[in-house]
Length: 186
Image (cartoon, rainbow, N blue to C red; front, side, top):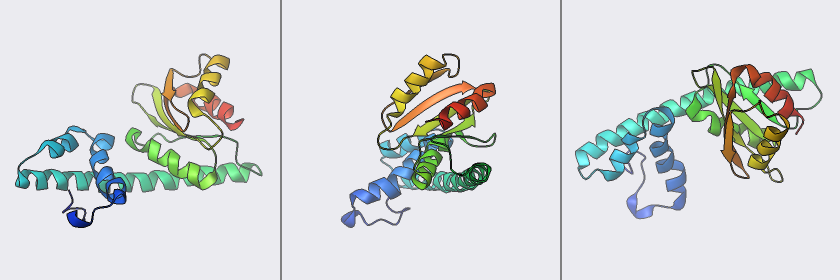
């Protein structure tokens, strides 16, 4: 993995783990099957490790391309929201039928950083439901906020979980507009 990411083992820094190795290992679980990453970590054959590292690198490149496309679509959605009112809503719920479940968390994080609002991005789960991943801002506990929503609107979400700065949830696809409207009031 160090070879494929052009990292010198003698000069490794924490940032290499976070920005070069970690994303490659995570790409398998985001897009395909995390067992590829696990197999690499357990591998003791250099030739096989190189093949697995190449596969993970290719998956990471695909993940980046998917993420870039999703981010472009999300920015278009934000621009439409900005044109329809003077300011963006307090919380952003975003959905596109072609978004990938494994990348919505990264997307939510990028949009949150850009617009400084809590963001929940959704992708289809394939069974009439949506799976979402949310990222919060300082001062808003994401999981607690979702718990309050669940108390006020008990039929809105199927399930949710998380912590102060991130959460995951699912809801019926037909509830996506209602969820967006509720989140806008945050």
